[in-house]
Length: 298
Image (cartoon, rainbow, N blue to C red):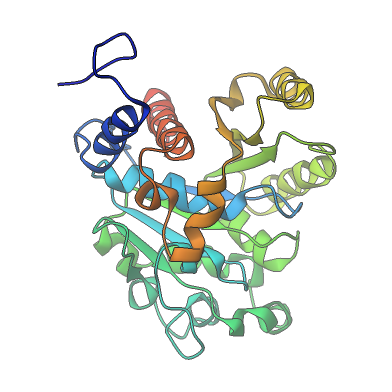
């Protein structure tokens, strides 16, 4: 039974509790399973736009609906690993050893504390120097792609793989773009939102031309939206005007709860499931899943 604002006995706390119940106890068959595994790189060389936050919360939203999801933390800071409750101290199996070919993705993937369907290949401090080591390797741009094409990944049967990139356009990001089918670009609804985006799009075009012809920008996600400002609406209109239908209808609001959640080793979906931020990421995850089903693409 649910209550609305016009019902006797309605309270804001009751409404939030109902939203939390819908998040934590969803219908597992509610979201369509993709026909083929979708590998999505989340990239934007501009820092502080919500790359990692969006990666972990979208992944958690899909996993809570019964889809099997892997997050690859390709940022040496290891923030995605922290948010998913996965150990990433020095010495644990990580994406660093995967890139060097020492272990498989299956060996490095650890189950997240957020969901039985959610896994993460963590990033350790060792990853910080990996770009220097990769430079001398054969097919250095395709190390991650090779790892994701292994039998260990096939055996785990993931529906989605999200790759969280560092805030740069270096060799780690290139590896992420070569390995992916799709690129998701988070754009914050603030000043200079589109600054540097042209360089990212040019790099994506270079990867398409020389290394991964199947790559394409499938999704633009607007983050840090503050409805109290005219600026947020102006940026939203500008992004939608430029990217059109690639931009998700769902906009992620600026939220204290979203910012707090990683400090507790959680996504916002488990930290505060009834919050506006949680519901927004759940809606965005649903939109991504439904769009993928409509396209019938990997």
